Image (cartoon, rainbow, N blue to C red; front, side, top):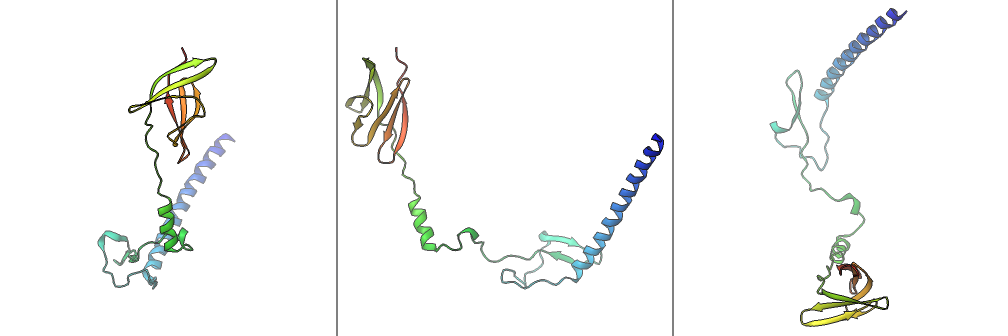
Length: 170
């Protein structure tokens, strides 16, 4: 019984290979016939009088006829914005310009812990500041949190938060 199964599997395998070869040879022959008898479509995007470019040959059939892909002459369009006018697109691009916050102008100078409240000393050029949570500096920077080793400051005009290293509590 085991020997019969072994030979049956080999016979089925050989028949499958023969069937695949037979279908492939018939399919190639049908494709050649269809390609030779097919006529080019006339569309507004296709340039009909374009010379045959040998770099774009896709098939050479048994009778020597060569086929090439039609050349597209129009510029591509964004299909996802077809209901939006060009003025709206221009306005969106102007609105999407992102204003970047300035770099953090402050340098850490030290900190003081007094009754559990942390006071941080900052330097900006010739100005010195002592700040705690909730303070606003120059109407643009707010101290959001002081949790050593980091202090979080917020640039108010753009609502962007940044962190500064202030070291651990000693």
